[in-house]
Amino acid sequence: MIRVGLISDTHGLLRPQAVAALQGSDFIVHGGDIGGAGILEALSAIAPLTVVRGNNDREPWAEAIAETQFLKVGGVRVYAIHDLSQIDIDPAAAGVRVVISGHSHKPKVEERGGVLYINPGSAGPRRFKLPIAVGELIVNGDSVTARIVELTS
Image 1 (cartoon, helix red, strand yellow):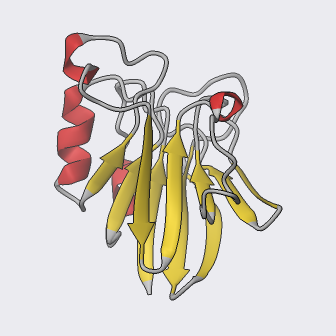
Image 2 (cartoon, one colour; image 1 turned 30 degrees about the horizontal axis):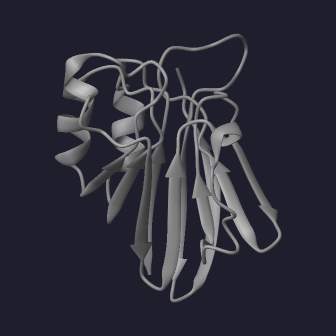
Image 3 (cartoon, helix red, strand yellow; image 1 turned 90 degrees about the vertical axis):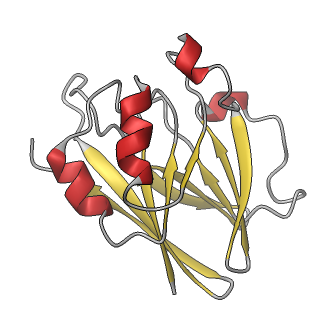
């Protein structure tokens, strides 16, 4: 069993509650709008980190960060992108089982056409009345499950 911690839209704020929720992850994926290199350093201290650049990550520290990433977790192919509306692949045709995104700040887990779409929501500053949250992906062989973890602010 592999546990992947999911976080997005930190916008420069890495809450202690988010760090606590991600402890014990085998890997972490950040869905963009990071807000500063220090966030990446702190997350990398917890577990190996895959990150995509968000629309607000435009300073020099973020120039080398790709806008999309493919990764393999166990027997499962995962695709990460910040803004799901900009997806440029057919996930199912590309052999992708899980798509991780951010941008909307709305936590959501939804399966469509054999592909699990996960947006962990925003772990950074609160936006409107949306919850502060992270996510968790569990991979067991080629089986995947996901959940949203709301954080106390």
